[in-house]
Length: 340
Image (cartoon, rainbow, N blue to C red):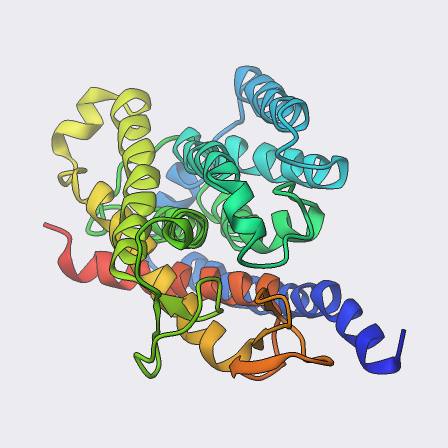
């Protein structure tokens, strides 16, 4: 193994970890400034009375049992390896502790993306190199769920725990964080659906999103109209799970005076579509794609590999993480502007 290949093998682990290590302290800093300002503002008494509630024993129990059951299901179905199951349990615990609507988004992503990964897997093996066999490890779990979990921690520290409707006028901070969590998850689900289903559906080759040039299937940054439609559907599923959980878990008296909740579903679809587009732009420019002598798409240069697009700066895990961060920070702003 030469030095370049060794550095490449390290990058899929180091780059996402470094990105998370930078993003989390910055977000914590912004949250600290926000909380300090809120305590110095005239509404401090209301913040202290409404912002933090005692976590009930039932929520603790559900926060432990639900992620365990999901992790065991993933291990049994070979959708996840042990390292991914352990990290997934920790993320599920945090999301469940904050709000059932948050963990509902994670469940929607986990189950539907696992099915999408197995969809026509034999055909995918003829298109590109499949190193994981569809099983997610800890680094994939981190890159897909890390941003949502980070926002959930901020939600727990800033808002507390419990199910709340989305209402930017009456409850801005909890609404912003909840839409951010849903957006990060919808982004990952939409992109997964697009890459796993869109790649093997349809007859024509996709086109590179930056140049519209036709490229082989499996090329990073390549999109198709079917793939874009599927990405929106993947996001809609996440939004639907979030919406139904809000309707079921939030007190009906609170919902009656809150803003309409149906836009959650639409925003989920927007998050899935935009997430797929952002992921494709990053993949077409900052992620290497080449075709080897066997006609398979590879993500690093080598002997007999013909370059198709992109530069060898980021890997697929890093692109997923960056896309989820961008959508998680963008979708709440869009929601705030268009919410009825």
